[in-house]
Length: 242
Image (cartoon, rainbow, N blue to C red):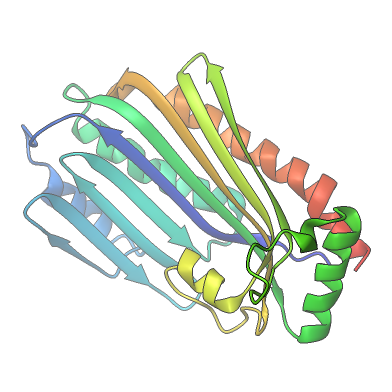
């Protein structure tokens, strides 16, 4: 098999403390972003601006409200374009509330997948995973369950910004499991599933909205380092030995 693991989903959430928007800028953000080419439509709800965009290869969802700003992008042309898009949206949201709330949490999810087109590919990847991590195929607590072999870990790190909690799950994902992770499936998605990983980064902090740029930069750097490490140490070896 050739290595074709690619970014399928990037999600960024910024959570802050405020009970209402002192200066309602949702309409201005909706006007600026709703017709930007990344979103197809937008609407104002009672507590949030919601933007939705579906294109041939890209799917986006953004929101900005009293307690959180978030963006999900799928199908981006590259890692950098996905992050640039998400961070530009977050920056505009933080500019709109720059002097008001305190940011308490920044959450990021990265989903990197390679489609598995047939049962032969899936079984080879499964066997390669078991060979690299002996015994993982024996961990099913239900004898009737079909086990998709994989590896996971979680960590906690106190850094200069606060506390970062991270979770990583690597392995084979069935179509229904992929569907649970994504807003929309694409025609080239694997018929029998995917091989790759899901990473969650949860940074706890206490910063003004206008002061989180260094935190976002560090989380982007950490996500990229994690991807490079997992790709070189785990994904490529498993694919080459399949």
